[in-house]
Every structure is written in C-alpha cells, then in structure tokens.
Amino acid sequence: MECVTAVPHPRTDAAESADPAEPPKNGRRSLGAALLLGAAGAVVALLASRQEWCSGVVSVAGGELPLSATGSDVTGVPAALAIVGLAALVAVFAVRRAGRILVSALLALSGAGAVAAAVLGADDSAALDEKAATAAGNTAATMDTISHTAWPYVAAAGGALILLAGILAVIYGAAWPSMGGRYERSGAPRPRRAKAVDPERPEELWKALDRGEDPTGAA
Image (cartoon, rainbow, N blue to C red; front, side):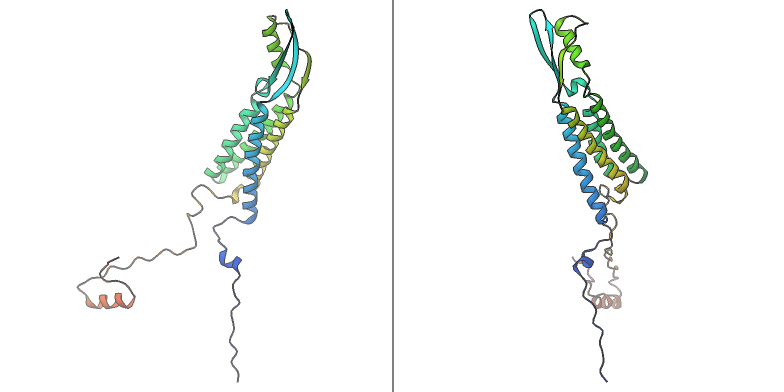
C-alpha cells in the first residue's frame, strides 16, 4: 500500500507580507490622494491670491493713472482658508475617531469657503475703487475701464482641491494611520524574559542549560 503524503501549498509573497496592522489598499490610496489634493490646492490658492485679479485706470489731475488689485487686496479669505486647510490636513493624523471626523469636516469646509470667496471676488471692484479714491484724493472717484483676470477662478480651483481632500478624509479617514500609532500594536509575539535561576539549586542550572539559556545571566 502506498502512503500519500499531503504537501502543503506554498504561501504566496502577498500572504507572507500581509500585515493586519496596515491600512487596506483603499485607505492607502485615499490617503495619498488626500495629501496630494490638499497640499496642491493650498499652494494653488495661495499663489493665485498673490496675482492680479483686476485692473483699471482712474482720472487724476495729471491725466489717467493705471491701478491694479491683487487677490489679497480684493479678499484675503481664500488665502486664509488655504492655510486653515493645510493645518487641518496635518491635524487629521494627530486625532482619532470623532476628532478625526471633525477635523476632516473642517478641511472640507475650508475648501468650500475658499471656492465661494474666490468666485464672489472675481467681479469685485471695491478694492480698485478704494485705490482710485486714494490716488485722486476724492472719495467719490471710481475706476474706469475695469478688467478682470482669470486668477480668481484659479484660486477657486485650489479651494476645490482642498474640498475634495476633505471629502476623502471624511469618507476614508477612519482607515488612515495616526501619528505614532502604526506600530503600537503588531502581531509579533513579545520576547519572553528568561526566568531567573537560583545558583544554589543545581537542578535549575541544568534545566536552564537544557533550554539553551545562560544560567549565569551573562549577555
């Protein structure tokens, strides 16, 4: 009679490298996407706020004076909310559970607020009128032939990226790791500490030698 020996199936590399403490693939992908979107959106919103949003000319005693206003002159809200969004993006990894949901919601609201402020400021000429009044020395002076650029909508696009990062954080944030928490719990067994051996009991010395331990306690 032939004896059939069961041969165990070889473990795949994926099974050997699987770590239950690591977040799932969806969590890792959403984490990378949120970091990229949030950081890029904040940079875009900040840079766009420093560009020229509108320009025009005002009539003064010596003729016509061209004036322009940057995004920060029109409204400082998009830039301020971009900074808030960056802070919230970092804070997401410092909190857990309900705190992470709240911070993720703040991240999303920062992006939505930046979008709204940039769109509302796209046609705003109040900053130019203030500059015209100062240049002409007349509070009733206003700008002529005002033109607007596309930079407000670029700032709005940056806010939209921050909003998307916040939405990802709200949906998938629970699966993301926390600062210093990735290796708090692992499946590796803790090393057992060698039991102290009483030198006055020879039988314990022999048992320690059988276990492969150094009964003298030397490293």
